[in-house]
Every structure is written in C-alpha cells, then in structure tokens.
Length: 360
Picture 1 (cartoon, one colour):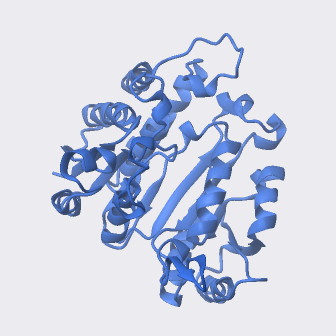
Picture 2 (picture 1 turned 120 degrees about the vertical axis):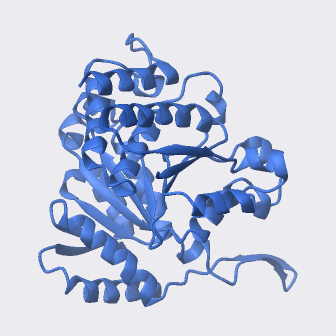
C-alpha cells in the first residue's frame, strides 16, 4: 500500500497538514485510493526533539514512502542558531537527498477570489500559470561560499554553478508540463550579464528541438518581474534557475491574492515527490486556528496527481476547494481589512472542503 510521510514541521505547519490529511482520508473513502500514513519531525520541531533539523531515520523513512507531505519549517525561536543548524537546513537536506530537482508552483486564480488580488480584476481574472524552478543547484548550493576576513575586511561570497545536465533535466520537466497545458514555455534568465544564464539559453534551445509543438520564448528576469504584474495571463509555463524561481514564484503567488492559496510539488528522478504549501510557518498566527489550509490541501491534490496517479481524485479536491470558495467561506487572509465577511478558522475550512468532497 502506498505510504505518505507527513512532516508537519513548525508554526502553522501542524494545523494545515492536519487539514490536508483529513482531505486525503476523505479521498480514500470516496475513491478507494489505497493510502497509508507515517509521521515524522523536521525543522525546529526536530531540533527540539533530537538536536538536528532532519534526523537520519526520518530521511530513511522518507525514502521508503511514495510521497512526503510537509507543512512548514522555521521560526524566530531558532534564529539564534548557526545558519547550518537552523530549521531550513532540514528542508534543503531532504530535497537534496531525495534528488528533488524540479519545483512546480502553480498560480491559479479561483473565480471567487478575483477580488482578493491587489491587481485589477481584469488583469488577474483567468490566471493559470506554472513556475518550474530548478531546486538543487545554483547559488544556494554552489561552492565556494561563506564569509571570511580578506585584507582586513569582511567579505562574503556565494557561487552560482550549473552544468548542462542539470539544466537539460529541468528544461525537459518544463517542456513536458507545457505540452500538457497551452504549449507555451517562457525561459527566464539574466544572459545579458551572467555566463551561467548564457549556458541556460543554449541548453534550453537544444532541448526545445525535441518539443517542436511547444512555443519557446526567453525573458530577462528583471523585465519578467514587471511583466508578471502587467500581463500575467500571457504566461503558461515559466522555467528558471533556483534563485530567480524562488523570487518569481512568490510574486506569482501574491498576484493570485494570498500565499495561503498556493501549493507546490518537488519532484525528481527517484519517484518520490515532496508536497508543501508555499506560505511558510507564519509563527505569528500559529496555534490560533487562523491559518489558511487551502494551499496544503491543494498540495495534497498535487500529491494525488503526481505520486499516486489519481488525477480524478486530484480534480475532485480542486473542485471542492473552488466550491467552498464559491459558497463564500473565507479564512482571514482572504478577507480585506474592514470587510464584514464571516471568517472560518483552519479546522472549519478543512471541514468545509471534506464536506464538499463527500457531497459531490
């Protein structure tokens, strides 16, 4: 029986993961999907329990599972720790050790939430794009790196490194995704300045020859940051390096109205997928039943689609989320200041999705 490892993590992570688990359990009941659960620690919770942001035994349990559903890691209580010992290192390690090189972040505007974006409705209505971010290379992992005293002055350096194999494999993921959507792929780079980006352009163009049905374009990252705000509906799939993808995917998320609505999937060649909301641990609202669980629930839908080969169940979860929003249910992050719309807590919103799923 396929097993999913739950890693609730820190802050609001346990709350949103619990809601997502409830939805997956409803899927098991409705669709007969075979599924079993395991649970472990990551991030600050793991530091508190065993002194490490990711214990070796939890990593081995992840390797033995079909998929990992993660809540969030980090929080100010662990900020005094050395950088290499902080909660975020657990997340970086599990991605690296499981070979999860491709991060997929869909940004879709649900019709009921068009008014929640800070952009005009005519700009955001109908947005449905996918950011494919390279996840295990680039400046976050390159060597040499560090801070040193050089000629009496503190100096810091990070190194952006990619080879053609790393670029080609993420490009293929993006072309494959584009082929299943509108067949449009935009590669985002900084080739006017960076040699690394120049190699990206060359390799992406080479891979494109295997996908003649997909229309490829290239865009500088600085202008892309502007175009995503001006005309986001023009884009279908975006592929880019780790650093650029980290920034642009958060920008795309906020265009849709709230980080609390955005799921993600991290995939690799080993068959294991890691799924997590993009909103972070939000320690300021942790334990208050105020978090939006929909990003975690939509991450569970991606898990059903990519790791369990259950597209019908995944579609049903997304339709349930859309139905709950159409019914007027909102968490606090989806309600403008001063608006009198009733607010649902994290547990209640998860219950609404389960009820909608079971009633369909």
